[in-house]
Length: 329
Image (cartoon, rainbow, N blue to C red; front, side, top):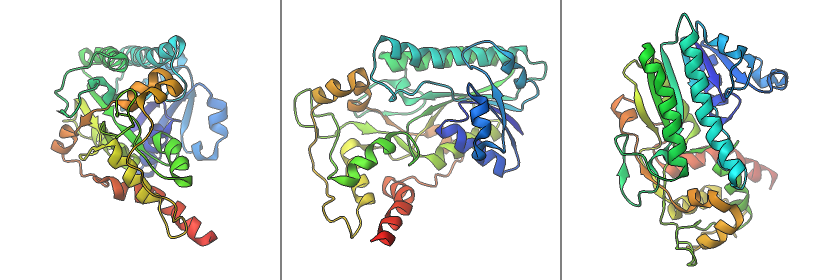
C-alpha cells in the first residue's frame, strides 16, 4: 500500500511510518519543514512532501493514487500554556487539516480506500467513573468541541465512497514524547505522587481516570484500521485497562525503581488542582479530569494488545534506561 500521512514526523506518525516501511508498504509524509525532515537519516526511507495541512496547496495532489490517508496533524495540547491564541492553534490545526484532507480526497480522480482521521478521547469530556465506549456522546468542554468539529469535517469523505475511521487516542506512552517525557525525569530524581483530582485546594489524591496506551499498540490499532475493511467510524485508541492517576503514578515509580535508587518511593498525595491551574493555565483541566475509556471496537475487530496492563508497558519502555543505570553503577 501507499499511505499518505499528515503529522508523519510526530510521535505516532513516525512510528506508524516505520512500521509500514518494515512491512513493505510505502509512506508519504507531509511536513511544513520538508527539507529539514529529508536531512534526518531516520526519514530517508520515506517520500517527504512539503506543505501545510491546514491550507490548500500542491501537496494535495500527492493524495492521488494513494491507497490510504492518515491525518494525524494537530498542534500539541501540552506544548504551551493555554491562552486565546494557543486555543486557536489547537482548534485550527485539527479542524482545518481535516477539511483540507477531505478536499484533497474529493479532488483525487483515483481516491484512497480509507481515511483514518486522528481524534482524541477528549471527545467525551469529563465523565467521572463512567465507563465509555465508542457509543458515548460528545462532551461540552473546549477539547470535546475541537474533536467533534474535526470529526465532522472528515465525515465529508463518506459521501465520496471512502471508508472513514476516526481514531480517538488516549495518553500515548513513549519515552520519546508525550506525558512520560515530562513525568519520567521528575519521578527519576524523587518520589512519585498523584497529580490533581483532590479538589481545588485539597491535596491531590489522583482519583481521575487515565486512559493510556503503549506506542506499539496505537500503531498496531492503526495498522488494523488501515487493513481491515470492517474498521469504520469511531475507534478508541486506548488500553483495555485504564487506571486512576494515583495508580499510574505508583506504577511509574515502581517501573523506574532499581537497586541503586533506594530513595525512589510513592507518596499518596500531591499538589492541589489550584496550583496546577496556576502553573499550566487551562490545560490543567485536562490533567485534573479524565475519562475511563475502553477500546470496545478494536477488541471486537480482533486486535490483541501487546501491553494490556500498565506496569509491563512501563517496564518495557524503561527497561533500557534501568539497564544503563545498572551498567554505569
